[in-house]
Length: 305
Length: 305
Image 1: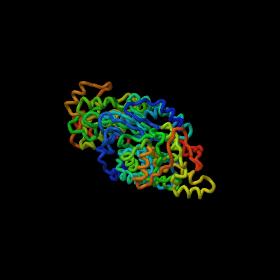
Image 2: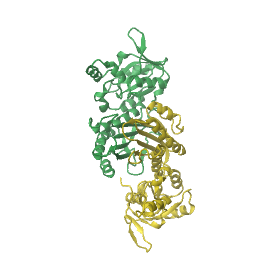
Image 3: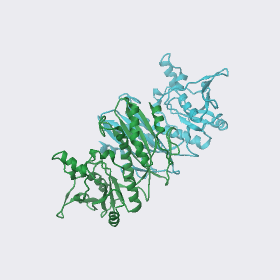
Image 4: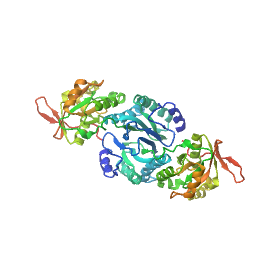
């Protein structure tokens, strides 16, 4: 089916000035527009792990496979340039599956000017796997790393957290534009996107930066979905616990020096709200500040790989 | 297993000056050394299609997954820079499998100064899939394309053809150094690596270049493995037919203008022989020149996708 599929695909791929040679030769040629440093990331979604066949539209899977990679580029404040898409397709209905995956993926690629620079499309007797590698280029003063947070920096987050499993994990828009705008206009010392869980991803910043974090848990923006989930699931987790641990919010956690954070919070330069949820501190570990001025350990929770 | 595995892996990854930030953050940062144009390719190997579990050493699979991508870069005369490796691993013995795959892959990466710029490592209830995306950079006057052959160009090939299934398809060394050396010192108008089959890949050049090819079949360098296969398989294909159609030789087919081809054949600048097997002609199609000065149609055969 590969030749038939490639014909179908090539008629639908957006043309991209950054891709002087697209799929069809032994490799594609990609032009960086802002120098010679590129940023590379890869994520694979697997049937039975990341989604259940028959329970969701494969267009959503295709879109998500690209979106999670763009979210990783956003966490570096990189500008997306190209994606390479590898598909392992169950033999039955392979062509229809490939088309649906791309029908979900292509509109997102167009929205972010991402060239589809090739990939591989195989069929087999096993389950569906879609692996996307995304290439971006560094913007501004360089990539935002997890390791740059300093004691005293404000902990800022975009958007809301918790309950993304109710649908937001498919529909989210990666914070690419937001990250580039913030990186261009404010001092941002570190960043990560929340895939594993707000508290767990925050701990990735503190560990890489050699610091800790004091969190005002009452300041955490909790999504309506987290309240719904807390209610529907009965006496399980609270909405706040969902917000701290559910993951797949694909929002940004940012470390911003105090003065810039005040300016940023006053400006609110994004369409989505930015909220301060605490402060990076010298002492290692995550802490929840209590109302009485005390504190307690905040255990990082989320999706452990 | 991912954290345990990543710890194991990071201790083994060679350091690369081209990779100022390796795996561990949201993305890796890659530095191009010769400008701003990179070359990107991707190939996935799947259990039950490209190999049979239990019948071969997974180190060979890991090595091959990288090698086929380096062969694609060689076909563009690109210098390899980095590889991104995505694994879907059967849950049982996943850690051992991942380690074996990398034990095969890493020595080849070291040999060609390829940075492992990250990837994804997942486990599931299905089969083994390994997807590698390779990034290289353009050398010399630009990438060698399939579309550049002109009538009158000599058809040159590296190495020998046929019977790679007997083991060479695992052990081959991608013609990266050879391609760069030829591109730097001779006029090469077009190139492809032989993955599908000598005659089929030759037809990819003629189709993309809008020309044909007259092949002196008696000049084709036939591998000993092709003779072995022809003999062992009984009255099936001849050794020549194996050479023309087996594929996975991962040798280069080159279109070289007449004068440069004479100089090149006299120089024999590579460790492996370069052989002229025919001439690109204006008339479309592949033709086999017969001893009496006539010709007959040469049907392109090989692995049809």
